[in-house]
Structures are given as structure tokens and as C-alpha cells.
Amino acid sequence: GHVSTGPDTGNCFTLPRVVKYDDELQQLIFEPLSEQEQLRAKTLGTLGWTELLPGVPMALDSGWRDVDAIRQAEVSIEIGLPKCPCSLALNISGLVVYYLEYVPPSIGVSHVAKVSATCATGCGPGVHTNETLQLKPSDTSLSLRVFTDHWLSEMYWQGGRVTTTLPAQLSMQPIGTTPALTLTASFVEMRGDQASCTPALHRAQAWAIDSIWVENGELLA
Image (cartoon, rainbow, N blue to C red; front, side, top):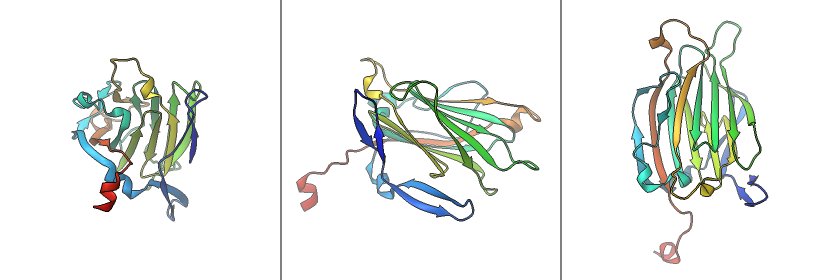
């Protein structure tokens, strides 16, 4: 897909995607090509099971900054479905913030979540996207797959049930600063004791993305 990154920076393309139809959800799914995983280079870091405390930002890139690779990286995040309504915010250097508003299923309420994104530069003020993420009764976790580049950020929610592409001018940050990646959880409403409601980060892993270009010698080898 074609993406305009603003009058001063030009245009880009999204990642190539595989389009599938999910019969249970009765909707199209947009997944990154499986070959994209072959571009994963150095593992920048991993995080295991961690509670997401209300309103406390968690630095997902702690220990990754020595390579300054968030400008061109892939981050995979899995979060357990909480037992009470809550919101999550994934902040990429303050340039792009992805939001998820989750309400557990109940009688008369379908199993869905609202996802949106705000872009600080290049795509105007305010919420740029606002979509519904369909969830299945069998879902026990939320998956987020984020790609960041010098000019773009792409989010694939729940394996591509919702995709978001936004300009994110990571290359335009002041010299000496490093892109940061944080995750914040907050409760919309408390039900029961806090321990049963607190969402948990199951895992997070980040990779540097290798170049797509190949040398003639590699092709002839």
C-alpha cells in the first residue's frame, strides 16, 4: 500500500501483506509476508511475564538502546486478556502512540476491543485511526506486532485483524536522543480485587531489521 509521509518527506510503501479470509470472524486478515521474519537480525532484547501496573510506564526497550535500533526494528508483544475493562498505550518516542480499550465479554456485550493511534508528527493532530478489533471466544491473549522504520510505524493487531500504518519521523529526532518504547496500562473500571484484573505482559521480544538489499555475490553463491 502507498503511504504519504508528509510534504517534506515524500512517500513510502507499507510492508507487503498476505490477505486471508477468517470464516469465524467473517473478515479479511492482513498479515506481513512470512519472508519478513528472514530479515530479523540481532535480537535486541526479550521480556518475560510481568504485571502491568496501573498508570506505570514499562520501558520495553530497556537494554536495547546501545544499538539505537528502534528506528528500524520489529517488536512482538503478547498480553494476557484482563478480567476487567482496561486501556493500554504503546508509546514510540512520543511520535506515535497506539491505544487499546478492552472490555471483557458479558451478556449482551460482544467480545471486541477498540484500537486507535495518535501521530505527533506528519499526519496531523489528534487520533488518526479508530477501529474495532474483533476477538474470538477462544482468544486468551492480545498480540501486537510493531514495525518501526525511519519514516513509518506499522501495527498488526491480533495477527492482522486490524492494521495501522502511520508516519513516525524517527529520523528527525534531535541528535543524541534515542527512540524509546514504553507500554502503559490503566483501568477503565475496577471489578473484584486488583490482582484478578491486572493485565500481564506475557512476553516481548525485539529484533533489529536487516537490509532488504542483497549483493550480486549473494545471489550467485
